[in-house]
Amino acid sequence: MNSPLPTTDSVLSVTQLTQQLSGVLRANFPEVWISGEVSNYSRSSSGHAYLTLKDESSQIRAVIWRGVHAAIPFEVADGLDVLVQGSIDVYAARGQYQLTVRQMIPKGIGPLELAFRQLREKLDREGLFDPARKRAIPRFPQHVALITSPQGAAVRDFLEVAGRRYRGITTTVVPCAVQGEGAIPQIVHAIDLANRLAGVDVIALVRGGGSLEDLAAFNSEPVARAIHRSRVPIVSGVGHEIDLTIADMVADVRALTPSEAAERLFPDAVKLGEELRHSADRLSQSINQLIQRHRKTIEAFADRQPFLFPLEQTAEYTRRLDDAERQLVAHARRRREMAHERIASLAAPLDSLSPLKSLARGYSLVTPTGSTNLIRLASELSPGDRIDIRLADGRATATVEKVMKDDSNRA
Image 1 (cartoon, rainbow, N blue to C red):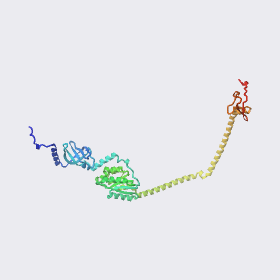
Image 2 (cartoon, rainbow, N blue to C red):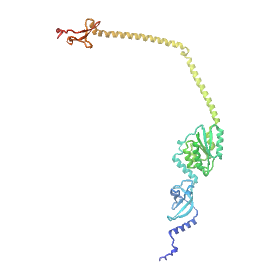
Image 3 (cartoon, rainbow, N blue to C red):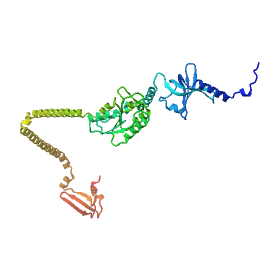
Image 4 (spheres, one colour):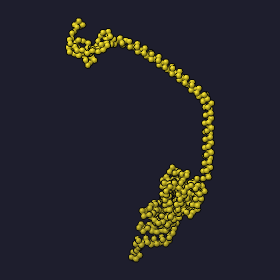
C-alpha cells in the first residue's frame, strides 16, 4: 500500500537535508581524535591539503586548511600513521562527511623528532652531509665571526675560552635570536651577513643546550641551506654533547659545545710556546748532529795521502802528463813520415805519366787561344788561327801561317 503524498512543508531540498546533517554532526562530534594511516595526500596551490584517513576496513576524507597545515612541523605523506584531532562536518558539494583537521601528531614519535628525521633524510639524499664537501678550518684564523645570542651563556663561554687560549685573533659577534619566533630568519641573515664581513675566514655558530623545541631553529631547512651556501667555513657548536642538530651535520666542523668550538678555533698559546721550544731544541740537535757528521767526513779525508801531500800527487800527475806528451809527439812524427813515404810511392808512377815530363823531353802542348782543348791533328788548324804553345819552361802565342799535313802518318 502506497504512503500518502507528503505536504509541501514536509519536503526537504538536498541543501536543506545536507545542512541539517551538518548541524547534527557538528553538534555531536565537535571534537574527535582519530587514529589512521594517511593516503591520497595532495596539496592545492592555495595551500590547503586533502587526504584520506584509513584503517583495515574503513576510511574517511579529511581536509587541512592552509593555516593549520603551516603549523604542522613535519611533512605529511602517504603511509604515515597519525593521530588527528578535528571536527566532523559535511562537504555539501559532494554530499560526503569529512574530518576538518585542527591538529596532527605522528604515532609513536614526536612531531619535532619526525620532522628532524624527515629533513635529515632529505638533505642526506641531496649530499649536504657529504664529508667530501666539508672544508678544513684554518689552523691560525685571523678573524672569527661569532653568531649567537648576545644575552646567552654561550657567548660568554666562547669568549672566555678564546681569551684564555689566544688573544691574537679578532672576534666579531653577529647577534641573533637562537630560539623562539623569528630565530630562523635571524640566523639565516646572520650567516649571510658574516659572509660579507671583510676579512672573516671562519664562522662559529653556537648556542647552549636545550630541549628539541629549543633547538628547533637549528633543525630547520632554511638554516641548513644557509650553512651549505656559506663561502666561509662554519664550525657549529650547538647544545650539549648529547645534542645533534641538522646544523651540526651540515657544518664543516662540529663541536660538542660552544666552549669546544672556541677550543677548535683558537690555538693554545701555552702549547704553541712549548711546541716552538721543542722544535727549536730538535732543530738545534739536528744541526749539531749534521755538523758532527760533516766534521768526521772532513777528518777522514784529511788523513788520506792526497790531502797530506797534495804537491806530491800533483808532481806525479805532471810527470805522467809529460811522458804522455812525448809519446804523442813521437807517434805523430812517425805517422807523418809514414804518410810522406806513402805519398812518394804513389806519386812516382803518376809523375812518369805527367804531360809535363814529356815537355821536358822536347815536346809541347798546343791549344787554340782562349781554349784548353789540345790540338792533336794538323787538320784542326787553318792559316791565321791563333794558338797557345805550352813548353817546358813557359808559354808562347803564335799565328798559323801555313798548314802542312804529313801523309806518311796515315794508316
